[in-house]
Image 1: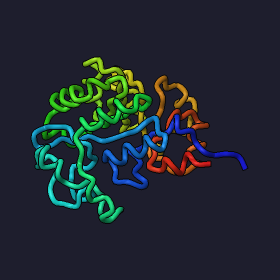
Image 2: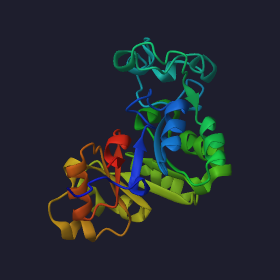
Image 3: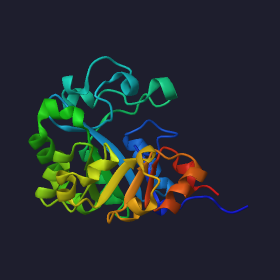
Image 4: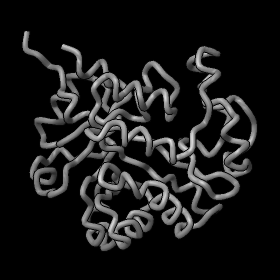
Length: 246
């Protein structure tokens, strides 16, 4: 039987090692790196005082088991809330708390071989505005900028990061056809993320893209190999261990 495992060199740990630990926590990010991930992905929402927090949902219920929206709480209040995913993981990780974006800085300094894809979530735009989001995120990450790729579904946010000469940026495509829009072309992305279900069958369309194409969410080895054969460069996954094991 042929080896269908996928190299860790082209796998992106989606929200850290999410399969066994609460997503978007310092613990999950460190565990992914300990496992051997060279690429990690994390999500950023903003607090009431417009400070960047490592968190995916605008709502606190699923991850923290409490009511309200993340932008209704200050950074200091959020730092004391758990990020333990109670419905999925029970109380096993209740001591793991929400982390600020600045926690990523020390992780990357300790692991210079790692690249982090930092996704700025569009839900925070109405609360903080794009200018504040970009300025705060880039300032926080400045000392590790060579290890950070700013990504977002919100193309203007990515464009703003590019305008500020951030070393690497990437769009997360809402639709494949968005590659032909003026704003996406002008961003000249270093990476392009796309839902694997939105990738066309025409291999020529895939191979015509100059930037590495990152497909998400991929959790099956056979499917992973099919995507790589079509010209996809990297795979973002919750199943880092499953895909990389022989």
